[in-house]
Image 1 (tube, rainbow, N blue to C red):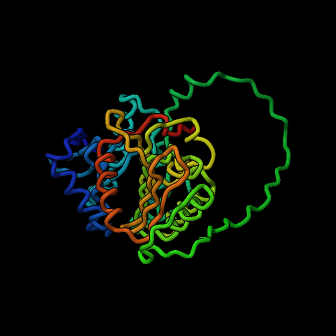
Image 2 (cartoon, one colour):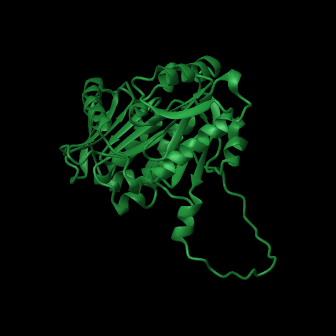
Image 3 (cartoon, rainbow, N blue to C red):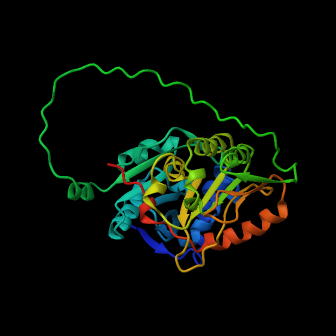
Length: 340
């Protein structure tokens, strides 16, 4: 890092320099679509601007849940240690804010760079904006030492371990004939067939899945089959986005085959937030797929409702309400995963 470099926290709305850097690096250089580069998280993030000799040369952002993203150094200024200095400042800022666990989605060519900063790989390779990535995590060693007592350990010596080959992942298959965006009929559902219809909708999704208050219907949404279908949506669609808004973060929500675990595995595709506690809770549970599909449980306490595969007016109406609640939602600390 040069002697005339400085890093400062800047305001997202008033600092055009960070947008200029991201536009040059991600949109112009890496060909990331503009509608994927700019997202709703920018408004609530901490943004860092690096300047050298008075020129804006780098930026990064830190989300309240510890996710670091949009790390960029202008092409002409690379190779001078600026990226490392920028990341170290982001980490220092996070530690001062009491964040002991960090995560990021790293382009595969930059894995070694992040390894040198203490990040470790936490996922298989996946595509984001058409670019290979892997999820990486970082843990504050000081926080670990405060939490764990020292133990004595005696090595048992050498021994052989045999790990049998894992079977190929079975791809979920729909058991319902209805097609998304085609059949307009409203179908009654109950606890016997709701899971099949939910899976059928998700397996046909191309872009978006929004789910409101699944914590009120864990009998349906904490099923292994449903979570597997959501994973299949992510695997098959590089632009897939899953947003889940819960009313309460209970221990039951965090256990088993939950959507929270899916978020931990695919943080760039799936996000789970908690509704702001001061806002009124809607009585229903609903699942919306793209701009056409809806599955509704009108009363969360009852295991019955309806599904429609082509109801664009209803989807538009409930999507608007969902977006309003999402804009004021929170990342609950219980939803974070702290890895040792």
